[in-house]
Image (cartoon, rainbow, N blue to C red; front, side):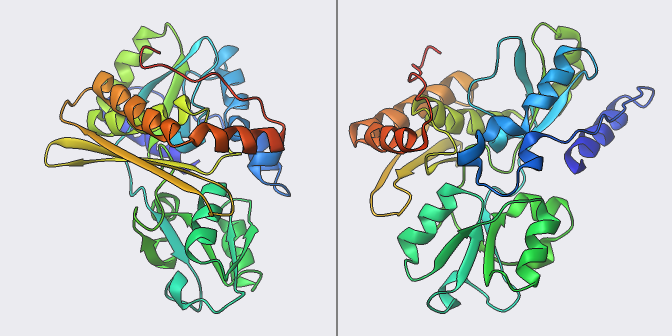
Length: 309
């Protein structure tokens, strides 16, 4: 809802006479809280109901956390707009400890992400990593009740809801490489709505779009899903886009890493960069990990994308 109101405010600023109404919806991803996303259908659970509202004309646009948007959209829909990114890092939250390194042996740490779970098991094998679902209030409530010694959350969500003071430490990309699109918001519309795309164009942030498109290309090429601990993070440094990708087993015992850079500042170059980094991960055996985990979960492995896609 914060994200929808954020876009509503931005549109009101651009077009004071435009009436922007919010159609509040609860998705399956919000409703199923007793199982991890990897066991109940993945990230698409957060967008299907919104796409149905777009398709039948109840809504003109849908606002998503980009990291929750599947890499392939259904026919008839498009991501027209990507807003400027908030802090993409993971955040360490705990009432009693200042960092992961301070946690005693056996401490319970909560996370909703296999990517974060793999990171924790890789760097802190002495910790007890357990699943944690629900909105921020629910997760923080479980932490404050003592169900967990600490939890790992996306920093962006805490910052947007005015809860930045709960962050005890930010995890650097070297410690925990972010998920593709983490910290960015995307606006989805029906394909062919050029009128609406033109209205939304001033909200589009080119630098963020190039970065997250490179990241999403890594995930798309490898058939990334909630069943696979896959990370991809691109950042601009001295005029060049630097991209890092990582695929690992859930227990963190096998970790594959690749990186690359591009000096071109357009989406086509970003997609090519993502394809190059994903290809390097493939040469290291990334698809073996993807197939093993996807088969174990019963998920279908989508065909790998090519740069032309």
